[in-house]
Length: 123
Image (cartoon, rainbow, N blue to C red; front, side):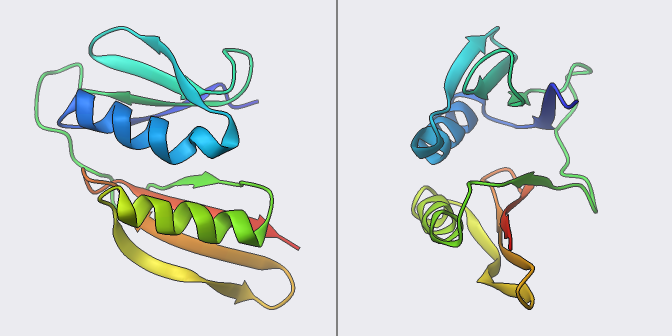
């Protein structure tokens, strides 16, 4: 149902590199780059993450309560992506851990532009 989620960024080069490197272990790469917007994912037919500079040419602002959630398939991959994001310049917004016993495992980061990203696994 979701085609792509877009987040605003201040530096397209940095954002493309951050997300392409971060999501490479999931098989994602920059699929389409149109200068002010780039789509990152496995294929154009699967859900993607888009990074863009705002259309109105005003500064980007991370939304309060907005978050992109990525399910990498296991608790181990949640941990791996969280630590990789931190190495790539993200900041911690919640270390990896069990949030709901036996149901929800998650970790939270803020990308270099302040956008909130969750890595999660159910079960």
